[in-house]
Image (cartoon, rainbow, N blue to C red; front, side, top):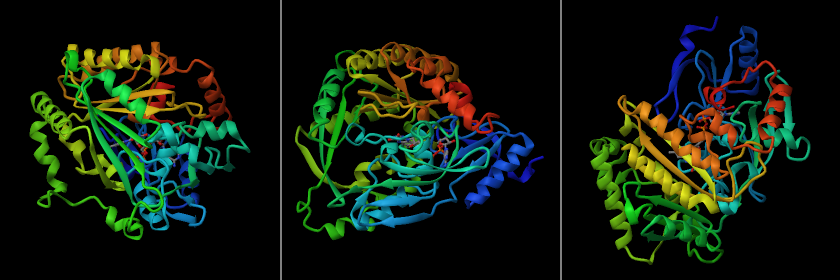
Length: 468
Ligand SMILES: Cc1cc2nc3c(=O)[nH]c(=O)nc-3n(C[C@H](O)[C@H](O)[C@H](O)COP(=O)(O)OP(=O)(O)OC[C@H]3O[C@@H](n4cnc5c(N)ncnc54)[C@H](O)[C@@H]3O)c2cc1C
């Protein structure tokens, strides 16, 4: 029997799905081993959890042990000459960049929020706005310590066990627990980036400009007004950025201080950001969001073609942290996202079809984000030579069923085009469509790893049960 006082309601970040679980928060590797041993003895599944920033059901499983690793947040070793760092799995992106920046290093891959842990980031093999250039987080990982379901501790890298290394990274916590990871960070000469903002009147132009920008710029991200239709379908704004070169920043010692990076606590110096989401809530409906999207496009496009400016790394990278707790505007139903990855050739056709499907269903996406990607060597990767479109939807008691149906409809052309989906953002994808995207025996190889390292299926998540 697991103790009742461990029972908590555990949710995905989108807060549309959750389950009760017995939460353990060990602070050492030995503590993790004990939790695994207890679960094994009682025959209860274990779901690893980092900061709980996956949108859907990746980090919970009903009536199971939730192994929350967020207290294992120590930086273990640091070589400021080589930028090589050893971290426990609960170290967040936020902690890492604050720590390393003063020595002139920045995480080579960061997500749109700085709150995820590196353990969770590896389990999902996260990507940033520089995916085309830098690849996924796993590509910058040199070595892992994994605590396997048997209690065995393994040191794994891409040479000594390439199959396990490439399976664990992006294997959504189904093979072993990351208890230490070594990364090599990116050298930066300044805490600032050059940014250019451009607008595009339709989807074709958005994709063309994003593609052209991928060489001269290191970071490329697009926002799409998903309410626009007809010849304006897919219109939006693109932001490109690149790091400053040595000598470009007149005061690098200042800009490389973590304190100068911090996002402001207030908006326009007046409104405390912690309460901002409450002001946004009244606009969280179709007319409100249509107006906000149109206004954003108009303001962005009237700045002109040459909106060029400098931003701190944190300001540019973590746009989604500007309004803390913004996901609460979607309560009580929460939100879901579908992030589809489509090869270059099919991207315009598939994304246009998806935007049309949303319109026909009367379920427009409130936030739509475009990125450019490249393939990577991980077994269950979402990476490919193409684009991704991430579509956010509010969930209500009235639209839930239609929304899940819409996700299925939007996923079908992605499969046909040879695309992929991103489990970190997923909540509603039917398993058969996820599985249909793996055509070269990847799922069978993953199943063989699972059989080898976790034959009793101790590690389980609701997402893995749905998709694998
Ligand atoms: C606002 C927002 C913006 C985002 N932007 C991006 C983005 O730009 N790019 C991107 O790629 N993702 C993005 N994400 C998704 C997010 O980065 C991933 O979901 C990431 O995995 C979350 O990390 P976490 O620590 O919260 O892990 P959780 O969500 O808690 O867990 C994620 C998975 O990792 C497993 N896991 C956690 N820790 C371990 C461990 N130590 N060992 C083994 N398995 C483990 C869990 O079982 C689960 O399957 C964003 C999320 C949010 C909320």
